[in-house]
Length: 148
Image 1: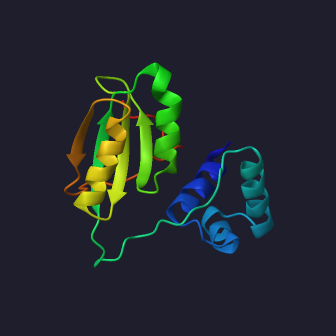
Image 2: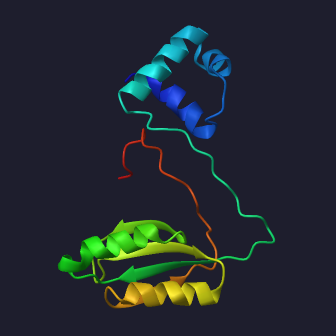
């Protein structure tokens, strides 16, 4: 992967709907050359897909939280199956430290959060933090080297 590929990826990361023509203009290549590079990066798995990020309507109340759960190794498969089946679970991280997993959730109400915590407690002890706000919300650029 060269500098042009990285520049194309950067443009697509900013706007996945950017036209090949617009990308070509910004990287000083022809549209067919850009299209060929994009298709190659898709085939090689460098580009794994395109997505839409939905924003919750302003009037929709949600309770976002992190539920830390200590799960015994023998219970991991059952726990992961249960978490995967919960539509309120947005992410699940396998972590080091005092808990095995951190589950990020978006619930419609405190009652729904309480129900989800109770379900997680079937797998082991939990600790829950309610997310009040998100002062920083960015995804690292996979093309950038890790911060030192």
